[in-house]
Length: 276
Length: 229
Image 1 (cartoon, rainbow over the protein chains, first blue to last red):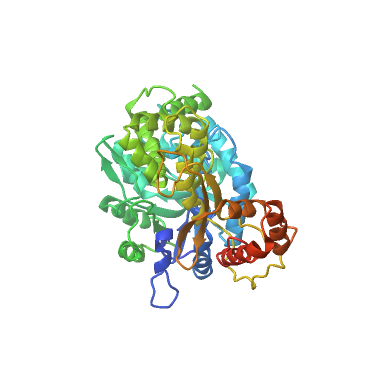
Image 2 (cartoon, chains in turn purple, yellow; image 1 turned 90 degrees about the vertical axis):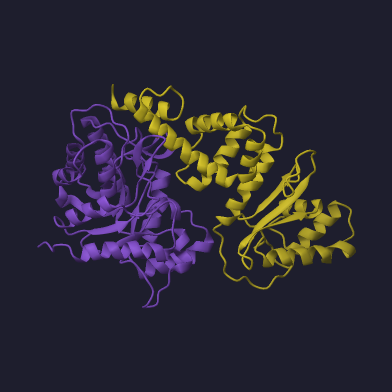
């Protein structure tokens, strides 16, 4: 990701009408797109999407490949995905350390993988299979989890070993780190420090909320980025020089509102220590 | 327990197939159900209004869990409501609502038409000397109930065309007469429109002199709206 400079923002269909290409108009340095939302794009969005792709670099972040599943990702979907990535010249693709379907049935939610050596091997095989198919080196994101089975392997050891075996890069989601650290009572900065930070391709920040019904913090991507996550961004950018981006998937505000958050991120990014 | 058994047990609990054994697994049951529920009630607002009015929420919940366990296959969330409609059609749920499939088909049709992918390129001038096809991005459907007026007390056949109107930037519905509906359904793409009209009118013993021009005019209008291409 070294050649992608600056900060990114998640592209939503709600923003399309407000995206313009003259010099005074706001544009992030790059947009992150979720292929599942754009592969089946209606004709009414396509013209603008193509303009955006021509003017601003795109990075793709998937949600349904289900790398931790018991079956390999479906070829039909991978073909659609590769066509989409090739068509819009998208070099970078990421997914999650989780699974979202089992026996071919979707859960439409990122489910937690068992932290076992077997799972590392199985996910690693799936990652290599996807990379061969897409002809791209992919990144994998540390996910939030609200449940985990007892394991001898810590989360950070699991992630590091998975990165080592699969040769994938890490998409470091700082909101997920924070939410997990509160829900599972560990130290967020220590956790970040324990990861193989040389493998980080880029960073996600997003919002979360406390859910009274389940009595846990939920990674909703539906609110502004919370203060502790901004703190973790400062902390992490002092250690590594990578691009951050804001994810917003629910309660989508106007692009103008997102721009305010983007500027905040930009300020933190501009103040980062530059690493040789 | 192996990864496979571990994951299967977890998914069975999350999707309501097995009783939840831990509070933390219940969080996922809540989240997964919530995301299905939200997608379905947003796609089917009238259906959900009826569910609430008739106090069928429990049956709705049960149907969602059964659907989540068996038929939610597409990675594209926008296709989930149609998967649910097809699931309900073959299931034991809501059997008292005889109009249910019509209603869900109609409500989903708006999303289906909006998600169309056909080209917006300006076409050449219409001529009945050419062969045309009916676009795959429209809805052309025979309903047993008047779904437009949400009149479900008695059956009343409705032949309906739905398409995205580029000028209005919205999905437009247009009830058709049976003749035009049958014509559009049976159009022969290897023959020009004039020939199609002639054969059709002949088959139904209708005067070419009286009806041919009228047909042509309507079809030209549908061509302008990209119902034909």
